[in-house]
Image 1 (cartoon, helix red, strand yellow):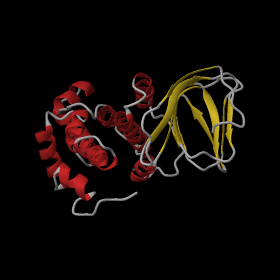
Image 2: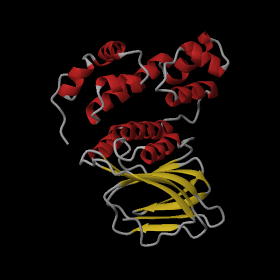
Image 3: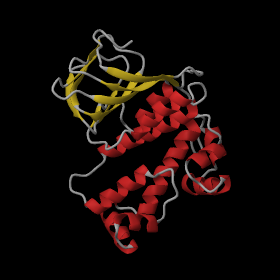
Image 4: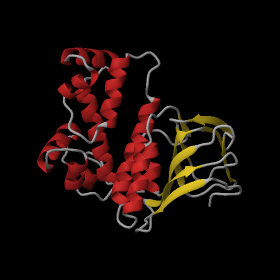
Length: 282
């Protein structure tokens, strides 16, 4: 697996021992506290994806012929069947949280967000979902697969969002956008956003619409429904569980909201694979 060269100082590791399928197979996750000699070379590539977030320090990554420098606050994804060589900066060694996983679900999610070949995601801001995956596997290594899939989806969604920031942006609108993305699982109102930004409701609406050509509520709803649609197709979570995970008041509210957004009920969407379409295969 990992390793023509593999050295580190200390590591907390959690191993998933539950059911693994071709669709989704969590492997292990952990936090690595490395020394100045930390270096990994994956000469022949592996069959799994590696998701990592740099908590502190800096280092260097090479995937195939491209080389990147990464720092605290950055995330990266190492793809299967590729040459990788990465090491910490000897003067400023890494501390990283990581997750190894394989299966078609991961490939589909990265493709859904057009991240098939993206390696480094600068200044993602937080590695909370990877930290939650470590905790999830550590506390429930047998039957936490669905929860891990949801957390990974949220992490991938955050990676995609981090690449979609404009260079010329209004700081208040950008801050509200990030707040929405980080609280997607919770009920949010315009009053919540106004209180967070210390601005009036009308000012928040104006700034957000001017910057992103949509309202905060429309953006919040579209992300929530996008996540719900993917969970329906990509996981075995029940409609009730998805409703609960996404912070809806109940199944009926979720079903009504989903149908209004997608044009079909959650059950019909899962059965058909997409509105009016055939069920998707692998």
